[in-house]
Amino acid sequence: MDTFSAAERSNIMRRVKSRNTRPERIVGLMVRSFGYRQHRNREDLPGCPDIVLPGKRIAIFVHGCFWHGHHCARGRLPTSNIEFWTTKISMNISRDRAARTALRRLGFTVKTLWACSLNSSLSRLIRELQRVRRNRRRVRRRSTEFAKYRE
Image (tube, rainbow, N blue to C red; front, side):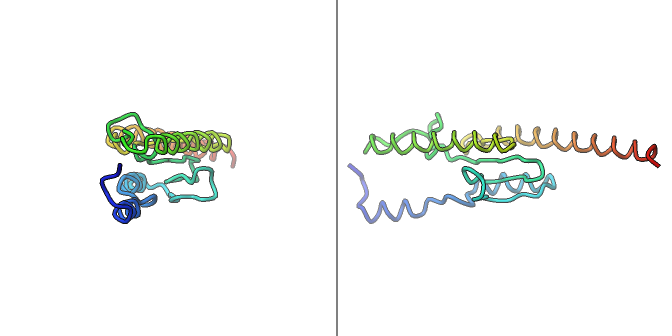
């Protein structure tokens, strides 16, 4: 049995945002600090990734632990209406898996960051972006080195 009335529960659920959440804003600020151009919530891509770096073909999902079935304290299912929540979360998980697969088929690198471990996830993402930036610089240097021989 729910501890809130139907109207109170409706108000609570109405306030749960699906876009521009605090974790998404943190990741977006970090990506922007690297100078990368980004798009938010691209609906034309499978799964509507939270952040897309189109030039690098990187799609980033920032998942809330409860809604996407993470195995942490925040991802615990409610004790009431277990059948409904189990079905809902398992459908979300399978939809996420299908979106990741479709994006990889389109040539995207897919990163999933969890809200509960955002600090450690961000450090991994920073290392990845630094690696991408270093590789880009190497390619530019090579192209300018050979430019003098073309003339």
